Image (cartoon, rainbow, N blue to C red; front, side, top):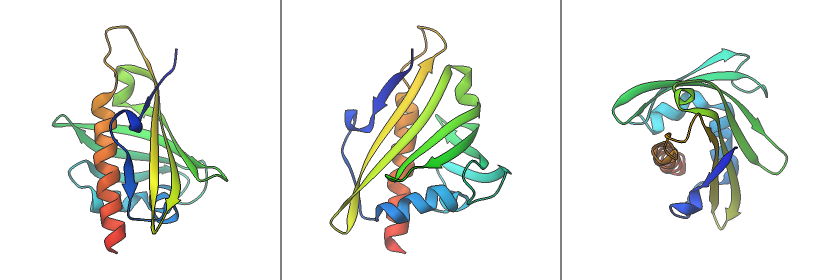
Length: 151
């Protein structure tokens, strides 16, 4: 059974950057994410396709709990500016069957409000809720927002 873990379970996330800038960075300029969040993300590379074509596949190298991990993903952005990152392969699948991150950004003043949802399915009952992964995504999101709002 697929479960959902919402950012709202942790904290509200206000961005100084606009939804367009934030989503554009993740969708079309993901190779710049390590410049904004080098502690979390060490590299993003195109595996199939390119940086801007919907359905292109990218590989992310990241660090969590002091360990280097990798995931391969596909990003989709719908007309409502909801960005879905579907993980296809990687270390996260050692403990989860399904792992998908969904960002919904709503304009608020000069910035935006971010709602993040992780959809996941455990391989078994002994697998923990992916709190460490959502903490990683929150940290990366804050780093990205700070970096692009200064630019």
